[in-house]
Amino acid sequence: MHDLIEFFQTNAALVIANPMAFLTFAILFGTGGFIVGRYFLTERIANLESRIARRDDEIEALKTPKGRPAELSFIPIVGTSAIGENRTTPLLGKWPDRRRPGALSAPPHQRRG
Image (cartoon, rainbow, N blue to C red; front, side, top):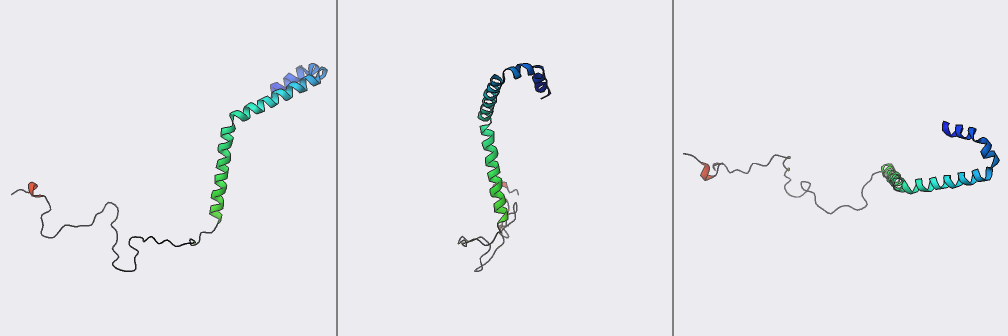
C-alpha cells in the first residue's frame, strides 16, 4: 500500500493533467480485477455460504425443544417387551454359554486317550 501512495505522489502531475484518462483506466482495471477475482473464488464463496446455512439449521435444531415424537413407533425393540420373558442381551465380545453338561468340549478327532 505504501508503494501505491508513493507512486501517486511521484506521478501526481500526470494524474492531475489527465483526470478522465486516469479515472477511465482505474474503473476498467478495478472492475476487471473484481470480475476475475469473483470468477476464481465463486466455488469457495458457495462453499462458505452452504456452511453458514448448515450452521443456521443446526442452531435452529438445537434451539427447538426435544419432545415426544409426533407418532409412536410400532417397531418392537428387543428386550423391552412387557409380555413374556425378558432375557438380557450379552455384552459385546461375550457369548452365552451353550455347552451341555457332561458333553465333551473338544471335537472327537482332537481327543486323546
